[in-house]
Length: 105
Image (cartoon, rainbow, N blue to C red; front, side, top):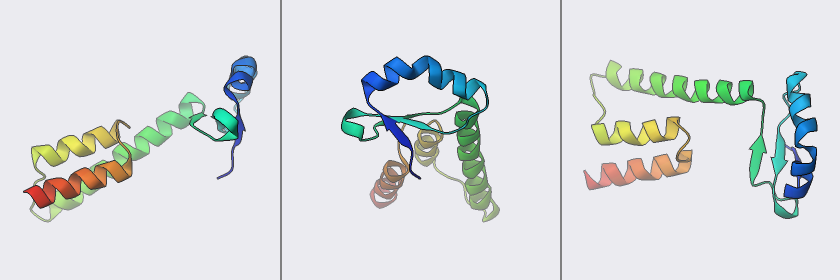
């Protein structure tokens, strides 16, 4: 997905305009970063909440599948996926931590 990326200065100067766009219902994400390289993305809070809800739903489905097979995730595995659900770690980091946990266990 291509998004408009603003420099930090431009984002600071245009912040009130971006917020007004979001208030009017524009859901288009706006990137912010140095040298037009996106380092962060601003979205309306509704979009953020939808993304967060979808992440929680994905976790619930995965846990349901595990339990349907008669298995129970370890507390360590649950802690890893909870961190992912809250957005504290990336999907790649979650997978790597899971691999380490599995290999170590």
